[in-house]
Structure formats: structure tokens, C-alpha cells
Image (cartoon, rainbow, N blue to C red):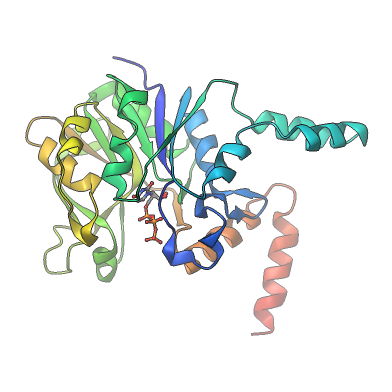
Length: 292
Ligand code: UTP
């Protein structure tokens, strides 16, 4: 089976739920404690063996491209000041030259359209899609677990996660059947942002996908769906008749940095997990809570 080499990271959305911060800062670059949200997702991709990162960017997203480049003045200053440990830390975060590609989505027409914009850079091979505003924490990381399952089953894999029934209208929701191999279940259907009555389950599509390149043909003529946007869910639902789809139920912790409260939760949780600063952060949060 072909190795999964490429991940598409759609970062062209407007991030309206986190305005005003996102007026000038891409939401994927908002710091979650000491690094941008996007860094956690890149680390997850690298741990799954991904070799090439395809960023679908848009206007006002230049900071993302700069983040994945070396910063000559900063490097020179750190070097001159003898801050070599910090310099090494920064260099270790940088993907090797030639491993990042950037393509523009000229208008934020929806996630499905953003993924379609990556078609030429992905080519004719299976690929991952990772939503960079969803930080997923587990050991082994989510995408690595999906890659292991994919080696057993092939096909298309979507990570899913249980949400409270009253929240189904915020997400893509799936209908699952029996076991399909690799510890996964057969995916029978999916619907974007259903009402509680329409929802086939309370399992949301949580932001990691392994897809076959056939999806690009369907995305090419996919009309607008929920919210007037070209939805990846709608194109996947059409492909489902012809191609195997599996639901991978993720059991780690998922933080949605795309809303203000989700961002706060991610920030606190990842500060608490930081190897150097976690205990200080815990003491600070406890002291703060006692004053409430
Ligand atoms: P979201 O729907 O969470 O992002 O898409 P958004 O549209 O930026 O957020 P709000 O609703 O206005 O607050 C999930 C991911 O898909 C990207 C986003 O950048 C985000 O990382 N996306 C979304 C695109 O790249 N293009 C789009 O047209 C839509």
C-alpha cells in the first residue's frame, strides 16, 4: 500500500468566531501557550511520517509562510548573544527545505473548496487532511493511529468523536455500522451541521482525514451546502457509494481553538501539560480559581 506522504492543511478561513484577534493574525497562528496552534498539528503530522505539508492559504496569512522559514535577523541575534540552546530549539521546529508548499484559495468558499485547491500539489496518491484549529493530543498521536489503521484497511478514514447531543448542529455528524478492520467501524453516511432530530448519531467529524485522490473529481463540481459553503462532507458523502469509508473513533483529548472558549481551554490545557511550566501554570490557575 502507498505510504501516506502528504498532508493538506487548510488555513484560508477568516476565523470570524475569534475576531477581533483574527483581523490581522491568522487563527492558526494564535499562540497556544508558547507556540502557534499550527505547530502542534505539524508535530502530529511529522509523528505520523508525513513528509510534505501542503498549506492552503489566503489573503492576510503571510505570517504562516514566514513561520515556516528561518528568520535571519533573529537567528543572527540569538547566535551573537550566545543563546544557542534557544536557536537549536527553533531550528529543530523548522521542516526541512522543500517540504512545505503553499497554494492560495482565492476566496474562502468552504473547506471542500480549500482541499480542492491542493489537487495539483497532492497528485494521484492518498493524502491526509488536518484541520489546524483542532489540536488533538494522545500517545500515539491521532494521525499516527490512523496511518496504522490505514495500512490494514486502505480506503478513506475519518476521525470521529462523541459530542453532547445538543452540540450536533455545530459539526459534521456521521452514521456508523459494524467493525470494518483496523479497530474501526464502517461509515454509512454523514451530514454537515444537522439538527438534533436529523442527526444519525452524536459522533462528530473531528478534523483528521485520510482520503483517496478520487475526492478531487467530486470536489470539482461540488455545489454549496450548509452555510452556503462548498463542504468536504458533501463530497465525501457522494464518494461513499463507490469507495470504502471507515470511522476511526479518537479517544484522546481534542481542543477546538476556533472559538473563544475552545481557545481558552486549549491554552490552559496545554500550559498545564508543558514539561517546564506545567506545575507553575497549575499553581497559578488554582490561586486564580480560589479567588472566584
Ligand atoms: P472553520 O470553518 O473552522 O474556519 O474551518 P473559519 O471559516 O476560518 O472559521 P469561522 O467560522 O469564520 O470562525 C476549518 C479550517 O478550514 C479552513 C480554516 O482556515 C480552518 O483552519 N478553511 C475554512 C479554509 O481554508 N477555507 C475555507 O474556505 C474555510
